[in-house]
Length: 318
Image (cartoon, rainbow, N blue to C red; front, side, top):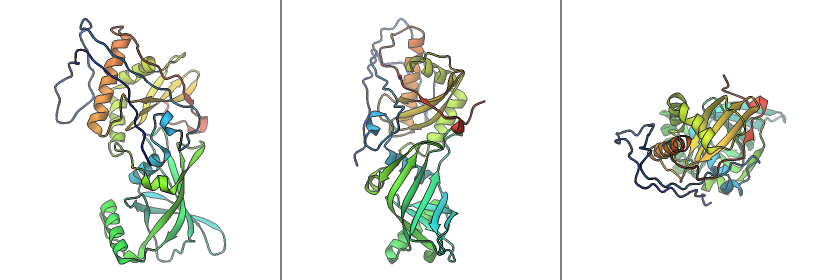
């Protein structure tokens, strides 16, 4: 499965005078001399208000649902395994799990628990208290029979939890398909097994929460400015917070007297690590500040479509 690449031109003349780099790149508030010549051209694409499909993800500047599912599984360690008992009743139990290289869930189950071969594993990930994306894996659960596979899965479990596991307690879920949902009360998207296995988890997954918390704590002025500069709004923003960040951009939650909305703002180009994410954020903050101060024109397309958040999904409002 090919991953989409998002980019737009960003040309600065002369080069911006960024603060001296430090060992760990932090978010900074850049201020440029307003009398220095500058030429910028960029494009911020609109976020879709319609449900995603696996084929339309490239138009929304978001990772594909398969990527999101892989990221959820990589970042999580507990879920709900649902199966049928021998008398035909559905049963859901909490389980710990790790994932193999291709995203296959590895479970450690009590020996007395005998799940039906057809099972599902539901996993959800809370994102900074604002959103809970989730995925449900449908597949066949079984014990690995090969000793080499068992040793590899034991190593996977040990790496995840730092503990040894009895090999006869290990199960794997052979993924048939995956249902990915952005949050509670939202439509889901079915992901094929091949797309799920071939996808890569987001490269920012391990640092995204820390970056978002830093921004929400220390850069709230920039977030408000992003709403006013990069988003085409016809109402006053009462409050805003960043929800999550990935390789292609970030999502903001916006509270207003009119309602609550989520908006997607893409990065100027795809990022692959924490340094690149912070650098892109700082550059966008600089541009937004200059546009707000009328030091340069808003020579880009503003985000026009916002996604209204249903009442039952609201979190984080103060």
